[in-house]
Amino acid sequence: MSGANATLNLRAATAEDLDTYFLLFSEVQALHVAERPDLFQPAEKSQAFQRHFNDAVAQPHKEIVIAWLGDDPVGAVHYEVTSLDPTGIYLIDRPMLWIESIAVLPHLRRKGIASALIGLVRQVAAQKGIADLGLEVWSFNEGAAKAFEAAGIKVHATTMLGRV
Image 1 (tube, rainbow, N blue to C red):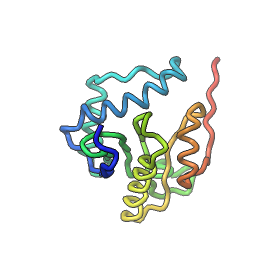
Image 2 (cartoon, one colour):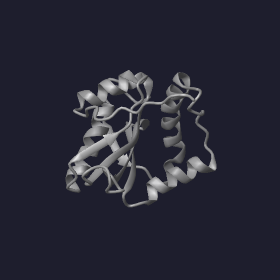
Image 3 (tube, helix red, strand yellow):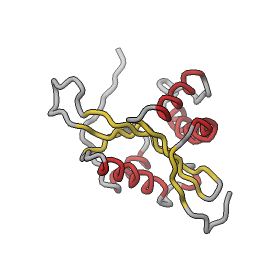
Image 4 (cartoon, helix red, strand yellow):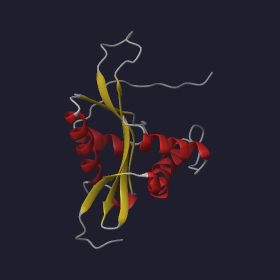
């Protein structure tokens, strides 16, 4: 790990960052697998994951940004410009910036990295004239929910699952 005085830098991922992003993605996926192994599968650098990453890096309405502390990757956010209701049936439709995933290494949580990543997403949204941010957080992930609420992102819907 780089020195304690290292500066946090955020930069867009490139095709060469696949392994770095997979490391960060794996941390969050492991949390989800530990809590809900009936729903989540362990992270695997499969062809599907590689397509998912390459799509996010290549598409103009999507981006992965990696947070670096010195030379060390410490977090990432994957977001895309989408729509509140693409069907136009349920909600008053308007553009939104959707956070697909956000990750911070466990030993560096609560140190401002997620706040910096969310701040970047807000900046991108503002530059594009988008007023709404969205994301999904699982009920077991209380730490993430608290971080998002502290950043001013509030619960607006609850998804419920049941078994037949």
